[in-house]
Amino acid sequence: MRSVIRGVGSALPKRVMTNDDMSKVVDTSHEWIVERTGIHARHIAGEGETTRTLAVAAAKDALAAAGMAADEIDLVIVATSTPDQTFPATATSVQADLGIHHGMAFDVQAVCSGFVYALTTADALLKAAQGKAALVIGSETFSRILDWTDRGTCVLFGDGAGAFVLTAEENPGDRGILACKLHSDGRYNDKLYVDGGPSTTKTVGHLRMEGKEVFKHAVVNIASVMQEVLNDAKLPASAIDWFVPHQANRRILEGTARKLGISEDKIVLTLDRHGNTSAASIPLAFDVAVKDGRIRKGDLVLMEAMGGGFTWGAVLARL
Ligand code: UT7
Image (tube, rainbow, N blue to C red; front, side):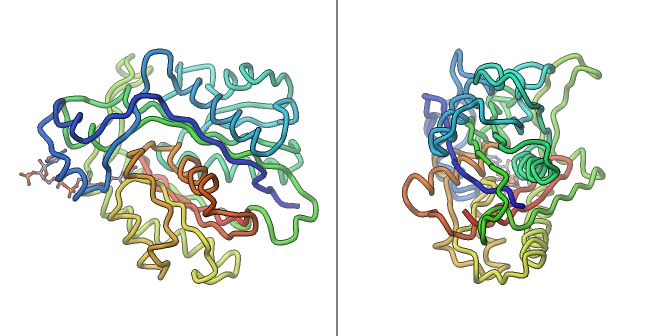
């Protein structure tokens, strides 16, 4: 039994904010942002656009791609650090908006690693016969928790959502999720965090990051977890057709690809137009590459992410 990716979808807020727009808000420049990160623009949620609405739009897009109806879904997982409310889980709101009245829905909070955490959780639940089909969504509105006076962080992030439809298949051949691996190390809690919360400040807080520290750990942790899933699946890095990384920084994702010997033309890069959309970045990038015809049925795809916690992980799947 394997979980097979049946459909992929995404959604973006209407408003695009370029680096030049950003330089009107904080003391920065297009040149600095491109050189240090690779980002050219990002989408920013406007009034009425929330993590929930973006998640629902991405889910509908993924269901259409899968050729499935919403009521065929038994499990809805939303990976997010920017929920519409502290509770209930955004996943239950998405479930309601899609008209699904059975099964289960919950959120996963692993910051930028949220999507690989959610995918691994959905895979485990499907394998445990807790349902036959799952919607796994990464949806974020980080623009709402940014400190718009801190040029070290506000230039990096964007809003958006992406979704996968997974189905449990008895004999999928070589298709499906082949290996998943998750890690966390809470000693690094204070390197990337939000300085507020319901139980402490009773506020939402703002994102804080020691960029250099995160960068240092990211390359090492990501390269090592990528190797772990390849070892689990007994496949060499040369077998990978597409590398769909979390889109945090061009230097990080190119550095990790180089460490594993994955050539640059296999990297799906959407950071330039989306910025870092946290838990949404992998399914968003995946969907771009499916829609433009790069990722096709039968392709072997390696996904990875690292984020606050620290949390990190990787998933290897054949479409
Ligand atoms: O998705 C979760 C995981 N997150 C990540 O993986 C992010 C990892 N970190 C990074 O991507 C990089 O550390 C950053 C892109 C955040 C920063 O790049 P950096 O090369 O580490 O720069 P820095 O923070 O050391 O700053 C270098 C200089 C500083 O000036 P001084 O002290 O050298 O005079 C900063 O004040 O650049 C300055 N600076 C800026 N200048 C123009 C910082 N932000 C900006 C800015 N525009 N937006």
